Amino acid sequence: MSVVEHANGSSEFVVDGRLETAWYERIPVAYWVVAALLLIMPAIASGFVLNQIFGWSFVLGMIALSLMFLGGYGGMVSLAQLTIAAVAGYMVAIFGVSSIDAVSLGWPWWVAVPLALIIAVLFGTAIGALAVRTEGIYTIMITLAIASAFFYFTRQNYVVFNGFSGFNGVFPPKLFGVDWRADIPFYYLSLFFATLAYLAVLYLSRAPFGLALQGVRDNPRRMAALGFNVNAHRVAAHAFAAFIAGIGGILLTWQSSQISPGTAGTGPVIDILVIAVIGGLGRPIGPFIGAIVYVVLKTFAIDILTSLGLSGDRFQLLVGISFLLIVFFSPDGLLGLWDKWRAGRGRDPLTGANTVEGS
Amino acid sequence: MSVTALSPGRSVSDRLEATGTSNALELRGVSKYFGALAALEDITLSVKPGERRAVLGSNGAGKTTLFNCITGDFLPSGGTVRFFGEDVTEFAAHERIRRGLRRTYQISLLFNGLSVLDNIYLACCGVSRNRFSFLRPRRNDALMATAEDLIRVVHLEDIRLRPVNELAYGQQRQLEIAMALSGAPRFILFDEPAAGLSPTERSELIEILTGLPGHMGYIIIEHDMDVALRVSEQVSMMHNGRIFKEGKPAEIEEDPEVQALYLGGGHD
Image 1 (cartoon, rainbow over the protein chains, first blue to last red):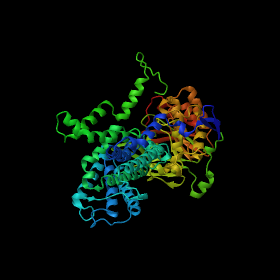
Image 2 (cartoon, rainbow over the protein chains, first blue to last red):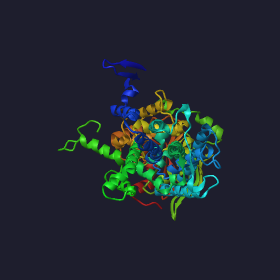
Image 3 (cartoon, each protein chain N blue to C red):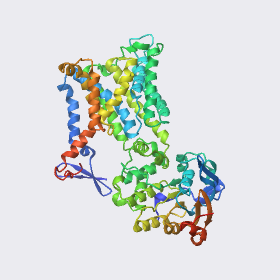
Image 4 (cartoon, helix red, strand yellow):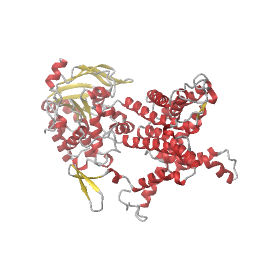
């Protein structure tokens, strides 16, 4: 491999006689702009926007990303991803420090957090092992049943889960002397893990495991005829998705400093699916777009509804109508609308033929 | 043809000595029922390593069901399937594939969203330990090199990066064959590989099949007698779920019973 420097400052690698551009040149300019905007956001936005809009969107986006990974790449729609996130959140509260001294063990964060993630992954793997025996609507039903069972179990169990009220006073560690729950530190903390999860899913989609998962989604019989253990692959995908959901669950618990059965009630569990579908299940960026739309709607619903002369507590109505409209006009979510708009922009208005290369 | 992707790991005689058998594939009394319908009845078949055999018969004779029972897509209702001496009757499909069995399908089952290269690479991963790898292939990846080799075997190098759904039908059939050749197979089942191909593509197919390494045996289901008899050394004739005649291509071609069946007559 050799490097060819061009007069305009760009460089290309010559591999086996073929020219390849450097990795940073293959990333579109728009991505760099978004990345720069996100990095300087604390200089522009208020603490409320950083924590309650962006921070919450990144965390919900991560949990929805775990659903997108299963649904978009694996063809398995699981409604238990928020439940897995809640398991991780509960474990951090139980093993670590919370205001409920009678239950919490008070172990240091560097023991509680890895342990919480391990248990969340084991829980997700067990759900996967059950769910892969079913397909389509039955996978949705079985994962919804698990989510509901977890909700009622945690509400009634006081010995381990502290019943209805759950745990409060669950704070992130003051690592490097920083209060990670404060607006700006939490913004960067959630942005860091959301970016990491996004890049991991993006990278994995072209690795043998990700390619095989997409093969399993498209044609499981063919995959078995290529030597793949289809069920083992599906279970492994559940384990990976549980890891992402687990990190999201811990951040969610730290952000609100509490975890209770209502965190993963039937409504919020379905909201994760709504977020993923609003954004689009086709690409890993979709869940984050869906999460921002969902959080903005939920946060400002009262203002919007009262300005329309409606009762402010009907914010779910607004979320529901938006969901219906998006799904009606684009089954692929907002990403699908974006793709349609781009394709339409490059189309000749008279002939309908594409005039933009690659559109 | 000398392609590294197709070279065997151990010699066939070594493997047979280890398993104490002289057959690559051995079916004893295999039957398959769908409710009251007998799709296969008491099939007994032995194929030697490196042997090329054609299975012929009219539509509904049970040929594809026979393949499905051999590969594990269906579990037989009765009888045993042995692969290089090992009883694989109860094995899942992927376990049989990992032992060196491959197949193609009557209707192309490809991954339409992926490129030609990705399809073959995936096929190579399936029979390697790399199938669970979380790491993208590097520039000098051995499996990727094997995939590139196989692309050349089926003459698809000019369209290696094209998505499969943009390929012509004949090219999709060639890709099916390349995927079946991945991971140094010991035995391949070709299900009507020439169906829908142009005369030129059929000639290419014959060239590919006859050019396979000598250790690589196969069974081919084919309605085109010309292709089937040119690429096989033995022929088994099927009718109503049973094998009723076996022999050399020339014997089968001359057989009045076979001629009657293929010309539309009945079989008693």
